[in-house]
Length: 240
Ligand SMILES: [Zn+2]
Image 1: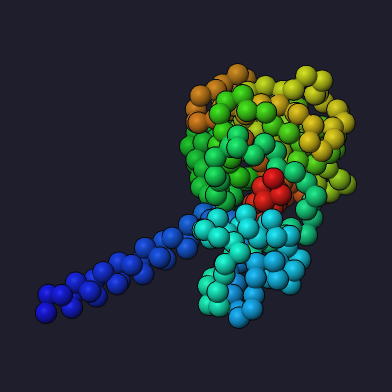
Image 2 (image 1 turned 180 degrees about the vertical axis):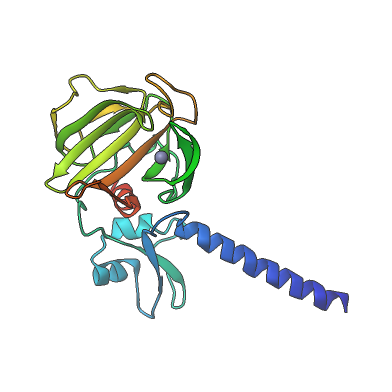
């Protein structure tokens, strides 16, 4: 009698854990997901599935780190198919592989610090944790349109990448030599270093752990409209 109850309990616990696990794998803490779940069909291989959706094998493998052998998949197995962003797919991840921690989608999460006190606001980017001083590279080329201190972003850089869009890099510990207002930068160029600056007047640091805050804004509307950058960041990370 006791064992039946125990079995039910264990199986509910297992479902709960599975649910928690898949929710975490989807990484949609605040904003969108960067992949979708596909159920493997008979005769499928990761390469075939990738071909079907226009995703390179390398990215398919990268999106499924749970597979101990990517050559072996079986009918009924659930795998993740990464989403290729419709814009800036040719961009590059702003930090070198191995220099940053796994990241989740923190876009749209609640943040409370403002220069006038604590109120609720929505997080307008994704945070990627890395050691202070880690080099930051331009995800796309463009023109620097904001440079210097911002109370939220600390030492930050806003790079206009085309007529309607800007990429935002914040909380830097410093800028790369030669970077300034109006600079033209190319994709992959060193632009600065990860830090923990911001949340206060000029020079404030240490109010949070060092990380790169990356944001995307539509600049052809007033005020600028924030865009969830997670799909881009995930896609770029898979190309590394
Ligand atoms: Zn942030």
